[in-house]
Length: 435
Ligand SMILES: Cc1ncc(COP(=O)(O)O)c(C=O)c1O
Image (cartoon, rainbow, N blue to C red):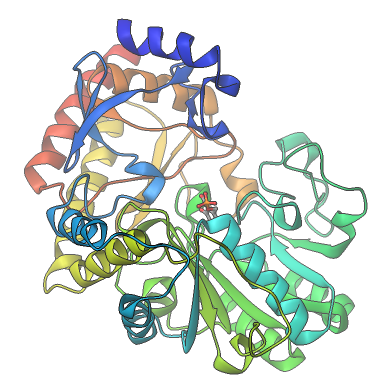
């Protein structure tokens, strides 16, 4: 890793922490990774070493690196001059496509990152309901703005009681008092959700949640939890926001809301929606979205919103997700990879549990039962996970460690069953070195 390490040392002299984004440092190897090029499901680092990618740009690269359809769409947009801060015909084309495929969408807005999407969605929910507070689930992650940076990576010894979880801040620098606007409830606890509604429904603008809790690996909501969530929010006029930044397009084209059969009032999309380019979306019921300026009174604007290059990339990507057989392939690769991983852990006598849905999954070291919420996930053996990721990287499989509770991993559609089997062979060799 000579050139990779040299590059890290060089970057540390001018980039804070050597990276453009804090979680880009891979704690398993102790530095950021520096890649020279990528193609499909493979990456090559600055030293020329090749990896099968099981991070996939934190979920943004669902098609695969350098997908031809996306690249051609981007090239066309560049050839048209890529005039940003103006609208062209592709904005409405993309909006129509999204409203067609995602169940809750009647109107959308484009913005740049998942963080921006949840920030604007929450402001809109407050504007529409005239209420101040937000209910979020313990551990669910909604980006890096102050409104939601609570109870995301709470250390196990700081959690507080399940009845009253600590709104543990995810960063310094947030204004005191902001945590008073947040009600935290553990995921999948219907009784505690009902209790929170008895106490706070009158002051809640919205409930925001990950409909599939991928940020702790892959945790599914129970049917009772989802039913309670939709009926309590409807009964009390509280808006239900599904944060589908990570879950959208992962297991079916309509995202978690289609998969689960529950339609929220608003949702956010990010990562895969842009086909590897920086687009995010928020949207939902028309009556709520009509509160946005210029027809309503709630502000959402931005110079780079709906940049023509990313809009073109998103159109190409979503059309690719809609191609016949796309999700059959995702589910076929998922089965080979996840079953294979489980068999490898058994073979090497590693206590680890694999949970996944569609193109993303989590590995819980030291847990043999299903993880149901953050409190389960945070019990996983982090040191063991870091050893596994380090050995995997050494043997040519790229996993990323984000810090905190169990991580989410994933593959892209460019990965074939043969590639998945190759990844398993490399991981077999990697596991042999750490057990
Ligand atoms: C569910 C969810 N919401 C929001 C975000 C923030 O997205 P971004 O990193 O694009 O700001 C993420 C990022 O991981 C996410 O997983």
